Length: 87
Image 1 (cartoon, rainbow, N blue to C red):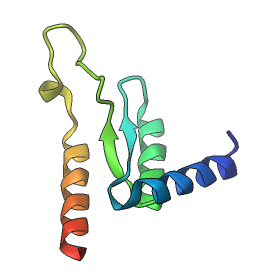
Image 2 (cartoon, helix red, strand yellow):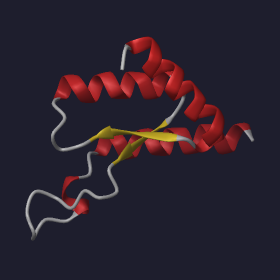
Image 3 (cartoon, one colour):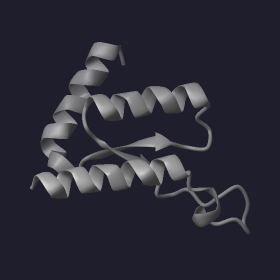
């Protein structure tokens, strides 16, 4: 997608999802630059940060709790407080 098309798609998703919409900003194959770009898009459209729900860690013995980045959790908490404080 061209960037303009991507923004239009995300804007339509935001309308459909309402104030609790989110987008995946973390996936283990994304590098730091890709994560920053996706986080910027999420911020621009006021979407929650999300990690893939199908992520199961680096190996069979690792769980999500061992690899879930704190910055994602902090953003989720920030968005949660902002939404529920405003409403």
